[in-house]
Image 1 (cartoon, rainbow, N blue to C red):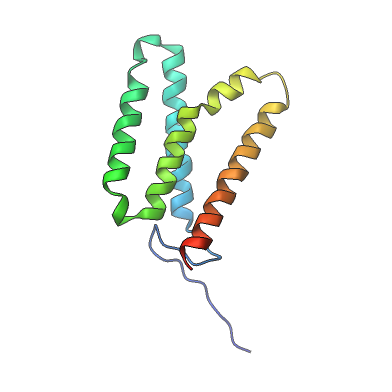
Image 2: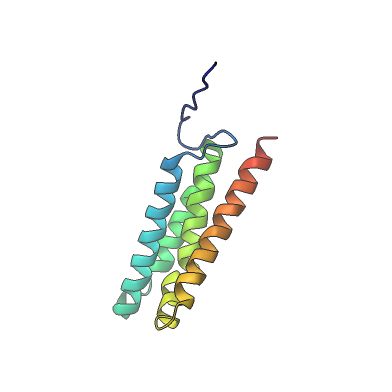
Length: 124
């Protein structure tokens, strides 16, 4: 009986059935930073320019370096845009109900599904 091993490839690369965890951990790191900065801007209105400036610099950098790590930078761009859309605002608006959890889980599943679909079709 022959055994097969799945070996991880460098960040930004993947096989059809293996998504590199470094990209996902980085996705959630950027996502969390975006939420933290947007929350800070809500708490301290004097920092209102911090979020748009950070957003522009992050998106600009990831687009410029897109050709070196397409998959990783696509996830980074999605993370920054998702935090811009404002999961914190969604949470704040629906903080008294279960709708928050359902909304966040649905959006994360949709983004994960879109990424898997993109990854599957880009390897053909």
